[in-house]
Image (cartoon, rainbow, N blue to C red; front, side, top):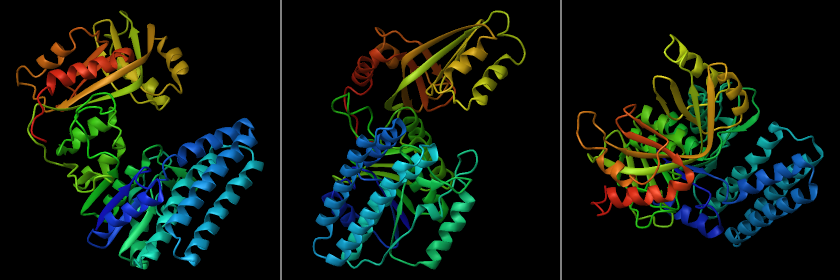
Length: 444
């Protein structure tokens, strides 16, 4: 069985949902389809939640009206030829609107927000399911809330997911299964989610749970590109990447793939294919254990980085100093992206400022602390074998006129990371693209 995940743009209208159905129809059955919310809906739900939190009921009602109109119009377009299914769909939308409206009288909480955010995926999957019934498919709608669970550390409980999902598949045999991405339950059995981009993660977890033949991630771009196509002209898709290379690119800014989605597929050696709903015949990018041998594959950039420097000539060389520094970040559950050290200082980066003030206060006990916001990590991914000369020459030649804040190399054979002020990001990406990819290679 294959797992096919379609993002918000891919299900953003009735026309796009028909395109998704035509793609699914061509796959060998059975198949599992994972859907995101329709494009823009999750943003509307976030805004709605924020409006409720601020007590702006008028704004919340306007947002809810837009959500209702979008789904009603989509239902009428998709199901125009079947009055019974159309009424069923409109009733479901009305029930969702009533549920959200009832929350207006409740005190705002994170638990309430997560219930609200879950409605986007529930709406899109119901509309698509109703549409498949007009096509006389043997389809089943499976609620992700009945099998997708995270533990007390917000990590997926794969044993639970596998057990529940396989039981559902056995009890409800079908040719096409449809379920929601992103949403789940937590260890307290409350509705929760896998954070933004979590539909990719859902697809990978489902694939791992059922031992899928392949996981397909369908978006609006034909695979992972060698650079950011929003900034750099004439980028090209990479035909093959290893799991490690794809994970580096996803983590450091390649928006096409959720960073966490690589690990379950990699663990169970399930190929991941990135494909374009708008150009379904394009080959996309295949991610496996294997990789095409090429020094430099691609470049990605990650914004909103915070650089922290701790300077202490007295403590840096002391036994256990770095451990104590890292323990500060562990206490506040704040991951570190990059780290460099010298004899008197250690510099590192984070991308989450939720507990920045508390972290800095504790670090000041070790020495002088400097904080720089508005930084960008540029990640160059490829095969950087330690004993191979000249690998970094082109990179640093390209950036000779751009000030670099940090350089990280050697931690991974697939990654050279550079930290710079975000105002130099565009210049750096263009310069690297010109120097490293100035003559487009064969599509790799």
